[in-house]
Image (tube, rainbow, N blue to C red; front, side, top):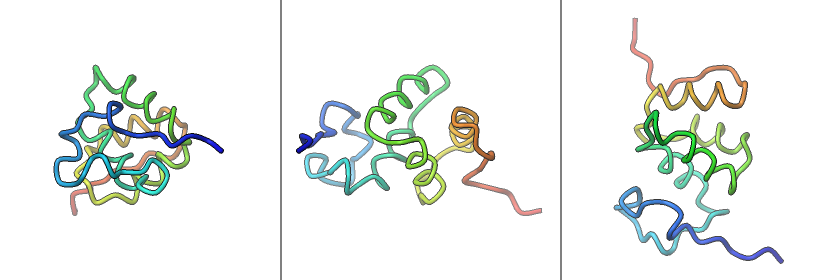
Amino acid sequence: MKPKVKIVGLFPKYLFWDMDYNKLDVDNDKAIIIPRALYATTTETFQADIQLLERLYSSSDIVKYLKQTKENISNKVCLRVANRYHVKPFQRFVLPI
């Protein structure tokens, strides 16, 4: 049986400001953890942030939950992720024409 991974200590607590950080489960809360882990990423921190996620999740899970999220993830982050995993570029926000 694989040991349970706690996100406490892996990700900054402020990313989960609106919920009980200690109750998040790596397997059951992917839809929350993945987008929030990349919410505050920057050009300088993206490499470390994405590598931390990759220790917990597959690239397909990371892409899937970024595409599905309602979180305010920047288009730049989405494009970096698509580039990293060689998938079709996607964006969270598209301005109407």
